[in-house]
Structure formats: C-alpha cells, structure tokens
Length: 119
Image (cartoon, rainbow, N blue to C red; front, top):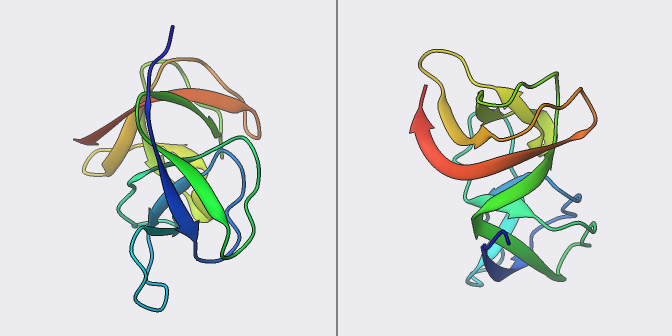
C-alpha cells in the first residue's frame, strides 16, 4: 500500500490533474495553491481531477504520486518542475521535487517519490 499526506488547498486559478503545485497568494486566504512552473518551489502534486479556480484541491505533500511527464523519464531520475507543472528530468544543480519510481514517455504518468533534493 502506498501511503501519502494529502492536504486541502484553495485553487488560485485552475489546477490541472497530476501537476506539481506551489504556494499561491489568494486575497490573503491561507492554504492556497497554483500550478508550478519552471523555477518554482514545489510543495506537492495535484490529484487525479482538474480543479477550478476557488475550489478545494487535494494536494499530496508526501508519498509516491503520479505526475504528467513533460519528456521521457527513467526510473531513478531526479525530477524537477517544467512548464505547466509537468515533470522533467533534473540536471546538475537543479532543485528537484522528487525521484522517479517508474519509466514514462512524454505525456504519460510517471510515479514520483516526493522529496526535495539538489541534483
């Protein structure tokens, strides 16, 4: 059984399914998240359904989760965030948000152990 830590956040903008997310400011409300982009600090990954702006989004903060791959990824690769929250292969010096546990081609799901590492 795969265990994880899931916390409810308010979506600041639409959050697509299975994407890396970061903290967002949303009119002073606490626990707001948005889709992460290149260079953002990733706090977790969105669930299996797209969530509309202002709705509650279940964000996985710890565990092994599916993320949409933005390129071919091999099990064991360090994973960083790409455009629109997709998973990309981390390169030397990159801040990564996890380690791939499966192989995946671009557009498919890669299962990632969430952990913050510098490649």
